[in-house]
Image (cartoon, rainbow, N blue to C red; front, top):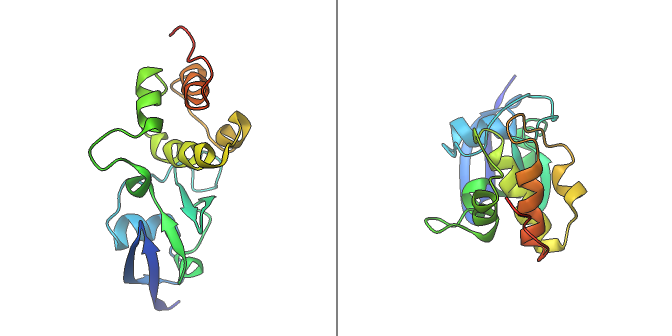
Length: 154
């Protein structure tokens, strides 16, 4: 095993930090770069809590090695969040009761922001995302609200 310097543009800022060659991108973001918004849930790519955008596409950061992201662009929940004001995605989730414990929320917000920017479907957002708290009704209502459809009667 060896250590390499991994240089990534994270949320628009170039960052360089050493990482072991076996360190996942999720671990590197949280411990190496101290961006703790990305959560690590299952570690197998099934839950979606760790989703980030890698070169503009959603990936489970628990399945990508930090060294694989070297020289690439990463957007985390910190980057897609409003920085103080709620984004449309965050507001829709709050208004439609689409979150409860918050553990899966970072990955969901990243997926929803990506889908909203590209006209993605509900299936695009919910594929690979597991939420054990909400039952998905509020999440679906938030997605409808974002797409201009009825937010439901929640």
